[in-house]
Length: 174
Figure 1: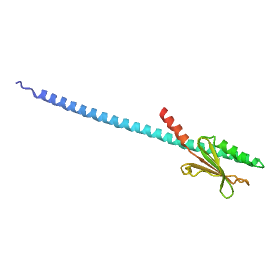
Figure 2: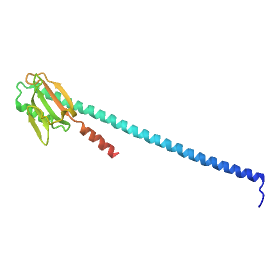
Figure 3: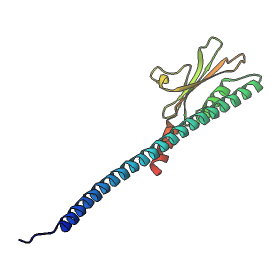
Figure 4: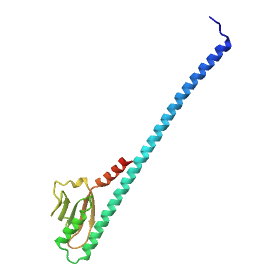
């Protein structure tokens, strides 16, 4: 067995320590990069979710403004006519229900009682009031006072499911 010199032992020990330090350094760098990548991914996901939440809020607001505009146009039309016939109500209510977000609409008298109501099923159904099986509590409502003798108020019940579906389809595309 050969004897090795002290210089060789020191060199081998130094190389071993250097190798160990390089392995530990590489492990630390890889872990740091993984944490950094996770943080960046989570930040991007959060930004996307924030964007879709903002978009949903904006679309809801725009839809509500559009429905309010439709109701105001209807009110202006009703105020411009001297005599309002039942056919006028039926036609106007059908026009409102053409909007896919609108589920139901009611015309109310001065006592707040419904005298004409319409709702979406397979077709547009009409009656003096909304049916009990229609779940209007889960819907959003716009209530607008008209202030003409025959009609005091319009209640419009709508759903934002179409807006949600639009945003979900946008998410799937990206």
